[in-house]
Length: 152
Image (cartoon, rainbow, N blue to C red):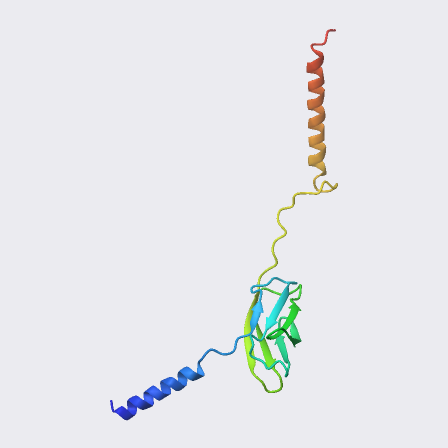
């Protein structure tokens, strides 16, 4: 292979690496998140704070970011009806500025756990009645034993 071809291939490889360099990434915390939970978005110091920024996602719609201590930030709440899955998040800096992207994962709502009962009448009423009857029977037996044998 000639030196000209080697140089051309090397330049093409460098150019390709330049185009595939890491894109600006939006910061989304916490990730994963559950339905109805608060989410914090940040431009990760990519936007000019004097130009403003907006975030958008199919998950929460669109919201404006505000200048924080050293970056643009926003807080959004995921809808209580959000379905589990990954959602893209795009932050656009100012007019024609940088675009930063990220994703957020929504997990299924945690289970409510086992039903332990509250003592309220309802589905547990037969068990409650049976338990009460057994306790009364045991109490009667204890009283009879204490009094001794009965004589007729």
